[in-house]
Length: 154
Image (cartoon, rainbow, N blue to C red):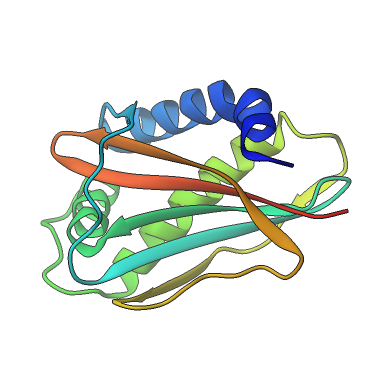
């Protein structure tokens, strides 16, 4: 699937899903943007794989500052001062919620994996036989993050 096809088929749905998940889970109003600065320092990526009649993955990418703010808002604690299990769990749950909502608009017979979370300052996430279908950037209250939809080639 090329970028325009992915954007055409899933663009509006991804935007609505992300806005709803962030509003519901964190009371955070976010909006799609074309302007997002890349995260400085450590980056954290949470992913959910989808398999069945449609195969691919959904990734949530953000800087460590955003991940800590999301964690604080999700579980009602002071923002963590370091990457810990709460931060990893919160980002994994965000990927799970976005992926689960996306599953409802994909062809039937798709199952979700458990979330995977990676972090660091210089890494790449890859899925065999896949290409990035599209990356959507979001911002809200000074926080920026990306959502990536990857489809595995048939």
